[in-house]
Length: 258
Image (cartoon, rainbow, N blue to C red; front, side, top):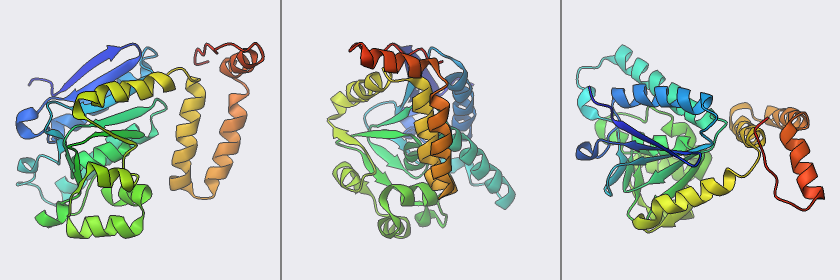
C-alpha cells in the first residue's frame, strides 16, 4: 500500500501533503494511521521546529472523510473510528510545536475538523469550509462540534452545523476561522513566512503558550493556574537566560530549546 502523506523537511519546517488528489484528499483510515506516525516524528525529532499540513493540488485541502469506508460500519466500528480520529487531532492540537493548516480549496467535514485542530490556518482565496454531516444523517465525528464553537462562537457554529451550509474564505476570515486569506499561488510562501518568524522564538516557551491556551478550553478557570505554572517553568530554561541576555545586549537571541 503506497503512502498517502508526502513529507518534506526544509529549514526546520516539515510540510505534510495529503496525496489523494483524485479523491479530493478525503481522509480515510490510512490517513489517520500515517498522521499518527508522522506526529511521533514531529514530537521526537528536534530538527522539526514547526509543521505545515496541506492537500495536493488546488481543489481541496481535504473534502471530508472517505464516505466509501462507512458503508459497512455499525455503531461500535463508528465509535472506534471517531475515537481514533479524536486521538490524532488531539495530538495535533496539543503538539508543542506550531502546526499550521495551509488550506487550498475545499475543507469540508473531516477536512474542516483537521484544519481546526491546527494552531494556525491560512486559506487560499478559493477555500470553502463546512460541516455537511447532517446531509448524511450524521454529526461531525472528529471534534467539529467542539472546535467550531471555540473558534467562531455558539450561535454561528450551530447555524453552520444545523444547516450544513458552506462558507467561503472571506467569510471564514470575518468569523476568525482562519488567520489569513491569500491567493493560492502565495499560500505556501505565506505559511512558511509565518512559521519562519515563529521558529526564531524560544521552543519551550512556544510549547507552553500552546498548552496554556488549550487549557482555557479544556480546564476553564484552571487554565489560569496552568499559565502560572508554565510561566514559572520558563524561568528554569537556558532559553530564558539567553533571551534576557540578548535583550540587555541589544542583539537577536539564539534559542536552543533547553
